[in-house]
Length: 266
Ligand SMILES: Nc1ncnc2c1ncn2[C@@H]1O[C@H](COP(=O)(O)OP(=O)(O)OP(=O)(O)O)[C@@H](O)[C@H]1O
Ligand SMILES: [Mg+2]
Image (cartoon, rainbow, N blue to C red; front, side, top):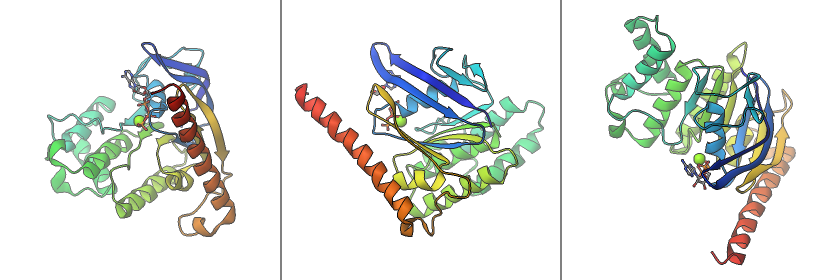
């Protein structure tokens, strides 16, 4: 549970300004769901928080300090899974544990790896498979298991359930929520998704980024005890109103980007 503070954060890859002016404050234990159209800079924002891209020290702070480089207190689930293809999926988790917990025995690492595989619904027989021999959904689950196994106070999850079927997705959403909720000190989570419903179900705070160069165009905070629940949210008028608002805002951004492209003759 680390706090993350972005104040007028801007970022460019070479000359392309991706983040224009992003301000947000994640308090320790917040579960922030980031929404926004493709290319608006969601992954870039996570990479900046992870320390994989360089940010202005005055514009982005994690745990009260500027982000200088990657750190083991931040676990990332990459959009493309980020598993090393030359080692087995299980060995990918084992390696991360070795880096984070150098004193652990081989047995303890194996036991922890199998525990997290099991938590994410991965059979033990998948341990020795190479990532390329797994399905997309299994790869996503290995990447998620690895992030949880590291027990980092800040979790950066980039569309972790994008490649899953609806049933598995629902199971894993519940698993992630339970794991986050049961801890005395909840982890701070940034979770990128394209699904408004997923955001409604998981978030303490929903943050929508506008088109690139992006800024925050909408936020919603759920008070503790008033977060939407899977079995009741679709019959709750307040949640449905918020859902419509989110769809409308995202749709407006898509329309205005398309219009700007037409006017520019693209
Ligand atoms: N390494 C890079 N070098 C140069 N440009 C990049 C790089 N990574 C991303 N970009 C550009 O930055 C912009 C934002 O990319 P980013 O991956 O952050 O978007 P996103 O919101 O995560 O999109 P999606 O929803 O499709 O994953 C895009 O225009 C992309 O082409
Ligand atoms: Mg992305």
